[in-house]
Image (cartoon, rainbow, N blue to C red):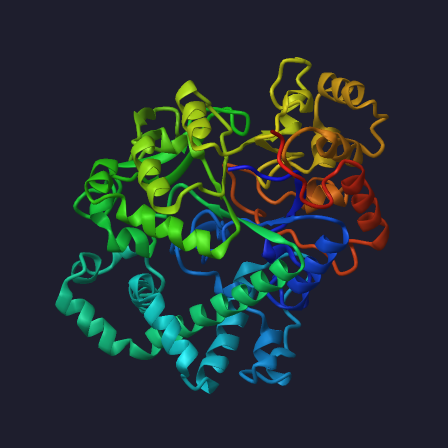
Length: 497
């Protein structure tokens, strides 16, 4: 698939400004669409939008299909007369400059409970429940049981619930009917607000790039409902878990802990689960980034119970078979392959056979080797160039902490004095021949490491950064718009022949 020459900004909705402790799908999101349009951008790239679990990571969600209800806008609920202005007035204990997930979860749950009590089921809600019943029924039951048992993961539930005994599930549905209905209502609100934002973006020429994490969390409705599709022990514990060997981000590798798919079982049923996942995401987004694309060719499988990733082994994955089925169903796939890490000829061959762009990260390029493929002079039309991603330090932070050799080579390459290194790097990226250029918002603003979104293989302050009101000034927007126009990215151009 061809991507016209264009550019965009990477910003997770949780990072939007606002007074409710977390960015959401309300007025600030619509204003951000306006700012993107004003600056001549084409894309808004987000991180995954699923309900976050352990560590607050959007890459560890309770469902591959459900939406993150923390993103529901209280102001939109006031407009819909489900809440009053007084209902959303008391937020004094929630910080505004970062996401305090514990405080936000408590406040938003109480807010959604009030909205649920006032909601009168209507045709739109009935239609939503019917359309999404194939995942929504199980997910709502999963979350209701989980909360009734003190938020224990499903593999610690009583055996009759853990193993999905039909009589036990029927009993739970009866006892938890109100909670199940509330979960479905919250999902209805999320998807209604997301669809309104996506339609607004479309009217203003903004396309959304979503994100499909390769793996799902062990404690998710997906695994609970599809145990036969994962390499699990009889008690629900994983026989093997996902990770990556040592790479740029971690010298000791990364142990993610996600269960590994039983690809043989998936192939036998025609990749039913993956078909549903792609169809769902292609409806939600204009373009989808496939996280850890390498995992569609081979998995780094670590024995369950290991505490580090070094003892893992590579195992082949039938990615060619999967994508043959997907292409037969959907045609050309509007996806971006996150082909970073331990690249092999087979990974590149699958990416190129699909005709989809891979990724290039400028921060990875300045090791002094002019043959480094992450340097802009090696880019080509069918790639997406980034200054950095959510897993990188900010450009200003990276430059400050890089070794002298890297900094000197970077300044020489960019013909820069280093004072505005973020703009010098953005200029080189936008000027490159990469079909698409994406810049994290933190780099547009030239922010230091305190604004970093995620430090891989760590927990703590990740996923908390937020944009401040007015921080994206008219001067910054004008500078970005000028660069975007200068390098021919301000409106779609005809693809290179």
